[in-house]
Length: 158
Image 1 (cartoon, helix red, strand yellow):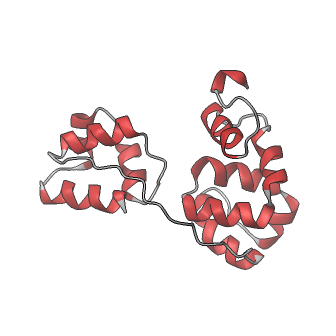
Image 2 (tube, one colour):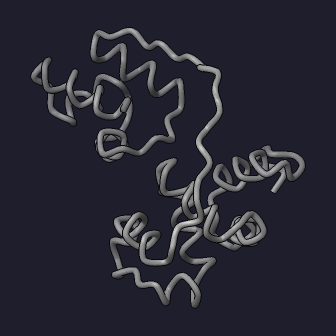
């Protein structure tokens, strides 16, 4: 939703991605990810983007329960997370043969819906194993340690 708002405001103001990136002090690739639906925003980056667009940032927490996610079938999950695998066509067999590789990609690059579906499919134990894998980004590892309640979530603690 925020990504769509960024794109709409940018286009209304006649700005290219490069112009907005320059004004906001971020990269074109980051803006492209945001506009494409990535939802792992940092508030500081959102503030810079809002300022560059001449907009006001309003962040709120709204009380309410998140809907329960049903465990997706393999085909449904592959359809949902397939776009994250730009280097290989993801198959149902990949989910069982290479679950840590699949989870690592989803945890690092997936949006909320993709991550929630993968978490429901694979479970928290496999997520814990995936975040311990060599090459996992320290911020992603810290985030998931915090989400799973697994001790100190600071990136330096890993």
